[in-house]
Amino acid sequence: VSYLLGATEAGGEPAGVCQLRFRYGVWHAAEDCWLEDLFVREEARGAGLGLALTLGALDHARDRGCARVELDVNESNSQARALYDGLGFTSAAAPGAPRNLLMRLALAR
Image (cartoon, rainbow, N blue to C red; front, side, top):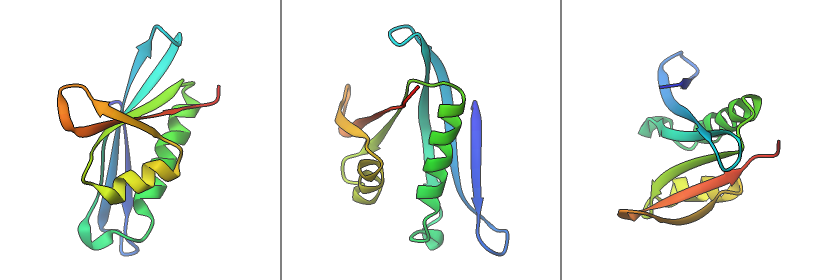
């Protein structure tokens, strides 16, 4: 794990986590960010934690000078897809994983 973001509920209980990895991309001559995991506990969903964690991840990637953020998501995960679509991610079928979508967001540099 290169970077880990966490979210808590009002009482301080862990509620969500976002895990990022970074790699150098020769095509962009810059780092790329892979959003490895985004998870919010079921009972904490709907409060905006997923959005907050994702926005924090995008901010961190921009601060590092990343050219883009990529992730994969199961095509049946409509809530996650709506979150990423709303932030401007584009999607394509993930190679070798027919039920997953590869999603990508170019970051301004």
